[in-house]
Amino acid sequence: MRVLSGIQPSGDMQLGNYLGAIRKFVTLQHEYDCFYFLADMHAITVWQDPAKLREQTFHIAAAYIAAGVDPEKATIFHQSGVRAHAELAWIFNCVARLGWLDRMTQFKDKAGKDKERASVGLYTYPVLQAADILVYKATHVPVGEDQKQHLELSRDIAGKFNHDFNAPDFFPLPEPLIKGPGARIMSLRDGTAKMSKSDPSENACIYLMDEADVIAKKIKKAKTDPEALPSEAAGLEGRPEASNLVGIFAALSGKTNDEVLAEYGGQGFGVFKPALAELVVEKIAPIGAEMRRLENDPGFLSGVLSKGAEKASAIADPVVRDVREIAGFLV
Image (cartoon, rainbow, N blue to C red; front, side):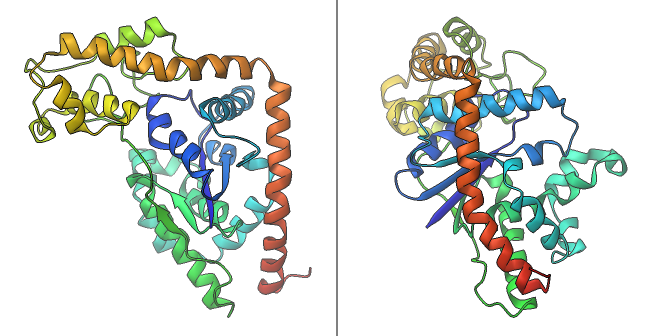
């Protein structure tokens, strides 16, 4: 089975990226044929400074490797380095239907009220996402709740291509992969909002490259409520900030929320926050240190990405050649 996933190089990697995605990538590489890419083509659906985009691409590659993704086990590459993604995306643009894209809620969320000024790429990027997956005939995709709709679109496009061109089973219908520990990390300033690098508060987000004292300061300032921690997870209902901090502790320690609360239930945040800060520093600071070392060696990172793009192209290019023939193009 083949797994594919990627992250856009449009901001610094933070704790939510690590616990929600990258840590899972590390686990999956030992069980599947994994392709992890830097989604630079997706990133430019909104304006990106070219120099910053290149810098951020190296930044995420460093995060993958520092967190434990092994380039010898998994294929790490930049999306734009494999031209087959773009070619298959155009063919899929002619297979997908406008009504399907009109139902994509993420475009509405990202474009907001000014959708007339949004790029065409922002509207059609779920089609490129389908090409990302299917150009490798990936069978499984690790997805969060916000991407399930796009995976369904990938399945619809694959099915319609197979049907329209009388090529049954040419493309697999990719399945969501819900396996291993995962966590939805919320803002340290608002337990109802996802942790995001775009949050205006500098204390809302823990970045993988934050120094130990910065991490501790952010956790100390994290929003809480006046109540002591409950003795079991059911008591966290209606307490989003408390639930978020307990969830971070559980995710990093490999425990359940109930196990964390068995230890800290009945105690206040004056006790829990220092313990959480110590744990986050223990787990995240070494990753940040290794990221800094890797970013100081762009030649190494460039080599990893180039080698990965060559390996990915060796699989993707024959798929696109077959698609061209099936579609009636001169090959």
